[in-house]
Length: 145
Image (tube, rainbow, N blue to C red):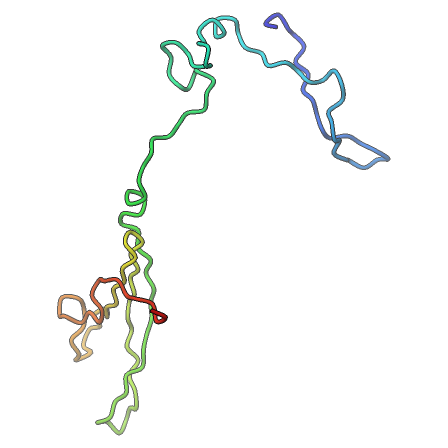
């Protein structure tokens, strides 16, 4: 009814013995009917969609266009910093070296890449340009097969 002027809202909260409680049903008489202006009712078709209006005014929830998974996962990469100990046999001062690695996991196709970042003045070939990629981007099978 568009002439309604009393817009009381139903509340499920109440007080019992000085403590706030939640009621199972709202009190009778406080459940308002939905108020829709008559001009809007005339613009609706039988299935509830508006004539000549956008979905924002039709009363129906807007449907999002379908986007495939590869659009969402494109350029999504998990990066892990890791290290390993490399044994040094020809030196009396050090027994092992700690070498840092970066593991990239590409969510788009489940591929893995393991590379070593370049460290200044280390004396070892490092970095992706120098060819120190331990594992190029590829799918790696699980150990179980």
